Length: 100
Image (cartoon, rainbow, N blue to C red):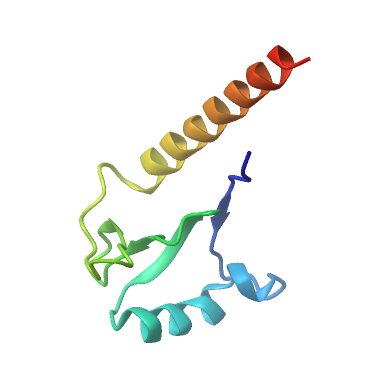
């Protein structure tokens, strides 16, 4: 099994650095050589969702260094990723119960 969850980046001054836009955006831009702003990251996945300067939601691909447009807005993508996490959690529970 593997851990899967979401990080939503924010601006609050009390956030840990790993979810702080003020901390992570410059790091991400330097590594990606892009002007994207990370907004949502799936734990165990190196490719975050980001906003373009125009406000479009894209998904950065660390292998191709491209950022194709995402299907839907932030909240649609967030909900889709939550459903995926719930589905994986339920599947893991079923698999675990079948091994007992």
